[in-house]
Amino acid sequence: MKVAKFGGSSLADAEQIKKVSDIITSDTERKFIVVSAPGKRSDEDRKVTDLLIELGETYLEYGSAEETLQLVVERYRSIAEGLGLSNDIVTTIENDIRNRLAYNVSDSGRFMDQMKAAGEDNNAKVIARYLQSIGFVAEYVNPRDAGLLVSDTPGNAQILDEAYDHLYSLRERDGISIIPGFFGYSKEGGLVTFPRGGSDITGSIVAAGVQASLYENFTDVDSVFAANPTVVDHPCSIKRMTFREMRELSYAGFGVFHDEALIPAFKSNIPVCVKNTNNPSADGTMIINEREYAMNPVIGIAADKGFSTIYVRKYLMNREVGFGRRLLGILEDEGISYEHIPSGIDDTSVIVEKDQLNPEKEERILHRIKNELNADDVYFEKDFAMIMLVGEGMHETVGIAARATKAMSEQGVNIEMINQGSSEVSLAFGIHDEDVDKAIRGLYEEFFSTKEVLQ
Ligand code: ASP
Image (tube, rainbow, N blue to C red; front, side):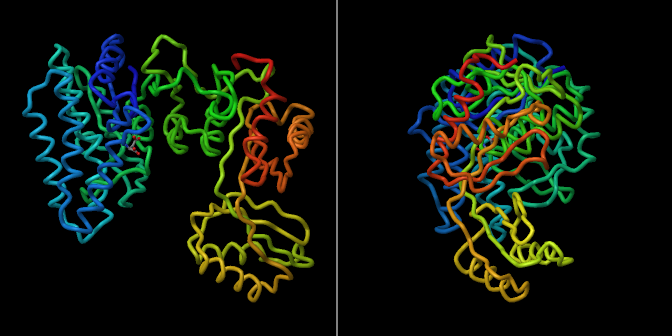
């Protein structure tokens, strides 16, 4: 049996939901369907989840948010009408959202989780109802009833191991199960959402739980591409890639998946296929455990902006026992996680996501590093981007780093940092934000320009 997850753009309106229903019902193995909230119908449109966030925040501030509430209800009304469903489902949805607004607002994190989850939850109900109306055995399954247990961390749920045993019993259900993505329940019974984009995580968890033969992730592209199509013209598509490669690419800015999403499927050895709702006969991209990489040692290039570097220099740093721990301890005290730490003998740089910083924190960090660690020099460098070359075959292929640095130097890109070795499947470069597009184009030209499909 298969688990299929459909993203927001695949479910943005009634026409899209009809396409999705055709896909679901065209294969009797598609038994477990995980759905997102309705996404954007056009570039100017708004995702239902974004509307719900606005609704919740406005309500928290002013105690009422009727206008936004009506925008959400209207989205569902137009979907229900387009699907030929009776108006009572719209009334049920409106009541559901009003009930959520009546939830205790004193705990804003939990209140917002209730609001955000309304998008997926109501969409799953609509889709189940539609499938029933066209004659299929289909049922909405609430994540609580499915036993999708998560940590009690609002907005940042982590799956609990015991959830997988509960989910396994879903296999006994008849017909098609429609499960809302993006949230689960804590052991205490509270609703908790995953981070944004978290329906992918639910899909992967359900696939691992029911031990699916395949996890299909339907989105709006024919395949995963070797580079960002908004930067490179018609990049080649990837037919097959490994979990590790996809994980590295997602981490470094590939928008295809939430970067944590593949872990449950990977751990359970369930292959994942990325497919296009608008062109379901296209092969898509298979994500598997191992691939033959002799032909394509490098599979993709990704880049992500928004990093800062803390540069620290101290003579004889390499001899000082505990220096690294104390440095990272200062960051830990400030609640900051790090991405990379390239080091020399007398210096080290800690690369962090800049969203975690603010001017006061920076000031405090600099002061503490200087005083407590007696650093000779310490400063922040801003507007840093990470560019990653990813591929299973790289560590066995001679000359990849040389080709990559040459390609970037020909574009006039100054490389501030290189990190290779700790990951066998990626080579990371720190460059300045403004050089990212040039660097991607240069690397693409060097590694992929003569290829159409990466096998
Ligand atoms: N609807 C949620 C979001 O927009 C979750 C998802 O679509 O995966 O983030």
